[in-house]
Length: 230
Length: 237
Image 1 (tube, rainbow over the protein chains, first blue to last red):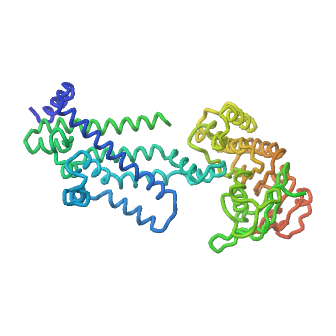
Image 2 (cartoon, one colour):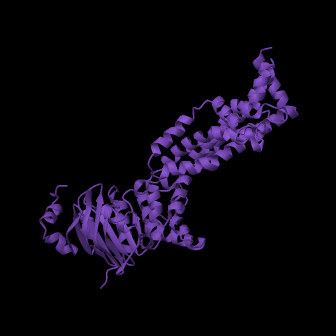
Image 3 (cartoon, rainbow over the protein chains, first blue to last red):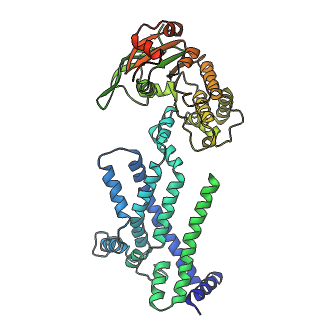
């Protein structure tokens, strides 16, 4: 049978039968990427607000740097984080390497430039007259930021979703920092890589369909929510 | 009588260019004071300073004879811009924005929003999306938003510049009505509008007050040569 058709049948079978291993890999993938993205948002959204709404020397350089970092090779980033988290590294004391936390940290570092660049763009696209208007209506400086963030809400949401999708579909960092340990750090991407190497093409395709299904469903859901909010 | 709002030798420099040069003007409660002048005369700069959106390079602004800070100016003044900028929400939320910032109870917010919208003939527009309205309707929402705040000073910058006569008439009526309880400072280069609305006219040219007075004298017998040229539509930028 064609491996793609076999993969589809296998994917449906694995999902519908509630295969515990597939479910646990999928759940871990979602959890790790969601927390990794949220962690990145903690610092990335305030940084975006400063980059979009404040003037300071070197602003263009900082924005350019974040844009350039979007293309950083994940293997290189994974290697640096590996050295940082390994037992002999500066953060070795915390024993995070080969745990889901290491993958979260790695994914947070990976998606930070995505959130910063896209969210900054969304915030900058808001009409600057709105802040002036809010000022004339009694808003404080902080409240005018609130106006801009509210106006750019869906742009910021799209930045976060793009970051989540990037984290969710990422392999290099998950492999180097997580180690692909069964029932501990195995996520969809590392499982696909492993099954492909083992010649289990149908299972790999099945897992890839789950991965793609989640990424696409999320994007469609967000777009529908955005349209209905207008 | 001490003016409600007064500028004393207000000067503003922008990148080495003098936008305002020792401007002394006064506005009284219950009056519309109109600032006329060609584009680039400094009208908007002056209104922005009075709204607390910009600071003068030198000079003072007094409210009831007392030196006022930027925060005090913002507490006493609100401004309507030439372009009716709208928040991306419905008309009600647009008009209620400033009232909610002031922490006014929702019942009072509701009543003030409805009366402000009634002043500009927008009853029943509360749930309409503000950005989907025509430019004239948006400008009327902007006027209602400023009126709802019930500030003592209303600064209005070229409010009817791009409007059709019907919308312009509604805005003018709202300005006239609001001046009963406020000091209104209107910037315009529409001389007919200045004649219709105002009790005091100030001609600003290249950042300086070149002439001022009550409208019948100002328009029929201007003393300054530049004012004569401006009224005749012959004044160069």
